[in-house]
Image (cartoon, rainbow, N blue to C red):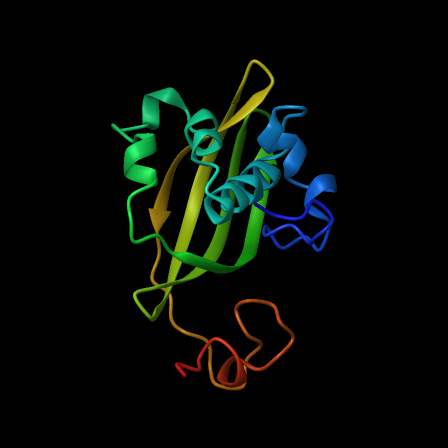
Length: 157
Protein backbone atom coordinates (compact mmCIF):
# COMPACT_ATOMS: atom_id res chain seq x y z
CA UNK A 1 0.00 0.00 0.00
CA UNK A 2 1.22 3.49 -0.77
CA UNK A 3 0.35 6.77 0.86
CA UNK A 4 -1.75 8.53 -1.82
CA UNK A 5 0.14 11.78 -1.20
CA UNK A 6 3.54 10.11 -1.74
CA UNK A 7 5.19 10.43 -5.15
CA UNK A 8 3.97 7.90 -7.68
CA UNK A 9 6.39 5.04 -8.43
CA UNK A 10 6.10 5.80 -12.16
CA UNK A 11 8.60 8.64 -11.86
CA UNK A 12 6.55 11.69 -12.88
CA UNK A 13 7.14 13.35 -9.52
CA UNK A 14 3.39 13.73 -8.99
CA UNK A 15 1.58 12.35 -5.93
CA UNK A 16 0.17 8.86 -6.55
CA UNK A 17 -3.43 10.05 -6.06
CA UNK A 18 -2.96 12.62 -8.87
CA UNK A 19 -1.03 10.29 -11.15
CA UNK A 20 -1.59 6.53 -11.52
CA UNK A 21 -4.11 5.86 -8.74
CA UNK A 22 -7.12 6.98 -10.86
CA UNK A 23 -6.02 4.50 -13.55
CA UNK A 24 -5.49 1.69 -11.05
CA UNK A 25 -8.89 2.29 -9.44
CA UNK A 26 -10.67 2.48 -12.80
CA UNK A 27 -11.81 6.07 -12.25
CA UNK A 28 -10.09 7.18 -15.46
CA UNK A 29 -8.17 5.76 -18.42
CA UNK A 30 -4.67 6.62 -19.59
CA UNK A 31 -4.86 9.00 -22.55
CA UNK A 32 -1.47 8.16 -24.08
CA UNK A 33 0.72 5.08 -24.49
CA UNK A 34 3.26 6.65 -22.12
CA UNK A 35 0.63 7.14 -19.41
CA UNK A 36 -0.39 3.50 -19.79
CA UNK A 37 3.22 2.29 -19.64
CA UNK A 38 3.93 4.41 -16.55
CA UNK A 39 0.75 3.16 -14.87
CA UNK A 40 1.73 -0.44 -15.64
CA UNK A 41 5.17 0.12 -14.09
CA UNK A 42 3.51 1.58 -10.99
CA UNK A 43 1.14 -1.41 -10.91
CA UNK A 44 4.11 -3.79 -10.95
CA UNK A 45 5.80 -1.80 -8.17
CA UNK A 46 2.61 -1.80 -6.07
CA UNK A 47 1.64 -5.39 -6.93
CA UNK A 48 -1.63 -4.36 -8.55
CA UNK A 49 -1.51 -7.34 -10.86
CA UNK A 50 -5.18 -7.21 -11.83
CA UNK A 51 -4.39 -3.87 -13.53
CA UNK A 52 -1.50 -5.46 -15.43
CA UNK A 53 -3.84 -8.09 -16.87
CA UNK A 54 -6.64 -5.60 -17.60
CA UNK A 55 -4.27 -3.23 -19.44
CA UNK A 56 -2.70 -5.90 -21.62
CA UNK A 57 -4.44 -6.64 -24.89
CA UNK A 58 -6.24 -10.02 -24.56
CA UNK A 59 -4.67 -11.33 -27.78
CA UNK A 60 -1.19 -10.78 -26.28
CA UNK A 61 -1.64 -12.30 -22.81
CA UNK A 62 0.12 -15.53 -23.80
CA UNK A 63 -1.22 -17.36 -20.75
CA UNK A 64 -0.19 -14.66 -18.27
CA UNK A 65 -2.10 -15.08 -14.99
CA UNK A 66 -2.40 -13.39 -11.61
CA UNK A 67 -0.62 -16.37 -10.04
CA UNK A 68 2.33 -16.01 -12.41
CA UNK A 69 2.57 -12.26 -11.75
CA UNK A 70 2.45 -12.80 -7.98
CA UNK A 71 5.07 -15.55 -7.97
CA UNK A 72 7.88 -15.07 -5.46
CA UNK A 73 10.53 -13.91 -5.23
CA UNK A 74 9.26 -10.61 -6.50
CA UNK A 75 11.48 -7.79 -7.66
CA UNK A 76 11.98 -4.61 -5.70
CA UNK A 77 11.31 -1.91 -8.29
CA UNK A 78 13.76 1.00 -8.08
CA UNK A 79 13.05 3.42 -10.90
CA UNK A 80 11.72 4.01 -14.37
CA UNK A 81 13.39 5.92 -17.20
CA UNK A 82 11.20 6.72 -20.21
CA UNK A 83 13.58 7.17 -23.12
CA UNK A 84 11.13 7.90 -25.92
CA UNK A 85 7.41 7.75 -26.65
CA UNK A 86 5.29 8.37 -29.70
CA UNK A 87 1.72 8.04 -30.82
CA UNK A 88 0.14 8.00 -34.24
CA UNK A 89 -3.64 7.68 -34.17
CA UNK A 90 -4.44 4.36 -32.46
CA UNK A 91 -0.87 3.03 -32.29
CA UNK A 92 1.85 3.95 -29.88
CA UNK A 93 5.39 3.10 -28.87
CA UNK A 94 7.38 3.65 -25.68
CA UNK A 95 11.04 2.86 -25.01
CA UNK A 96 12.03 2.61 -21.38
CA UNK A 97 14.33 1.15 -18.76
CA UNK A 98 12.75 -0.29 -15.62
CA UNK A 99 15.30 -0.87 -12.86
CA UNK A 100 14.82 -3.44 -10.12
CA UNK A 101 16.66 -5.54 -7.57
CA UNK A 102 16.10 -9.29 -7.34
CA UNK A 103 18.04 -11.73 -5.19
CA UNK A 104 20.49 -8.95 -4.33
CA UNK A 105 21.33 -8.19 -7.96
CA UNK A 106 20.55 -4.99 -9.83
CA UNK A 107 18.67 -5.76 -13.06
CA UNK A 108 17.01 -3.74 -15.82
CA UNK A 109 14.28 -4.30 -18.37
CA UNK A 110 15.13 -2.24 -21.43
CA UNK A 111 12.21 -2.50 -23.79
CA UNK A 112 10.64 -0.94 -26.86
CA UNK A 113 6.91 -1.50 -26.23
CA UNK A 114 3.97 -1.40 -28.60
CA UNK A 115 0.49 -0.18 -27.72
CA UNK A 116 -2.88 -0.12 -29.45
CA UNK A 117 -6.03 1.88 -28.71
CA UNK A 118 -9.36 0.11 -29.12
CA UNK A 119 -12.71 1.68 -28.32
CA UNK A 120 -10.95 4.59 -26.61
CA UNK A 121 -8.79 2.41 -24.36
CA UNK A 122 -5.02 1.90 -24.65
CA UNK A 123 -3.57 -1.62 -24.29
CA UNK A 124 -0.03 -2.94 -24.11
CA UNK A 125 0.53 -5.53 -26.84
CA UNK A 126 4.17 -6.61 -26.91
CA UNK A 127 7.70 -5.42 -26.51
CA UNK A 128 11.16 -5.98 -27.90
CA UNK A 129 13.81 -6.56 -25.25
CA UNK A 130 16.93 -4.48 -25.81
CA UNK A 131 20.42 -4.80 -24.39
CA UNK A 132 21.18 -2.55 -21.44
CA UNK A 133 24.17 -1.84 -19.28
CA UNK A 134 24.53 -0.62 -15.73
CA UNK A 135 25.16 3.08 -15.24
CA UNK A 136 28.65 4.29 -14.53
CA UNK A 137 29.75 4.85 -10.94
CA UNK A 138 29.32 8.63 -11.18
CA UNK A 139 26.06 8.59 -13.15
CA UNK A 140 22.81 9.57 -11.42
CA UNK A 141 21.28 6.67 -9.53
CA UNK A 142 18.59 4.62 -11.25
CA UNK A 143 16.20 5.17 -8.34
CA UNK A 144 16.20 8.96 -8.90
CA UNK A 145 17.41 9.66 -5.36
CA UNK A 146 19.61 12.49 -6.58
CA UNK A 147 22.72 10.60 -5.46
CA UNK A 148 25.44 9.15 -7.64
CA UNK A 149 24.93 5.51 -8.59
CA UNK A 150 28.03 4.43 -6.60
CA UNK A 151 26.61 6.03 -3.42
CA UNK A 152 23.15 4.52 -3.77
CA UNK A 153 21.86 1.46 -5.64
CA UNK A 154 25.33 0.23 -6.65
CA UNK A 155 26.11 -0.38 -2.97
CA UNK A 156 25.64 -3.93 -1.77
CA UNK A 157 26.02 -3.37 1.98
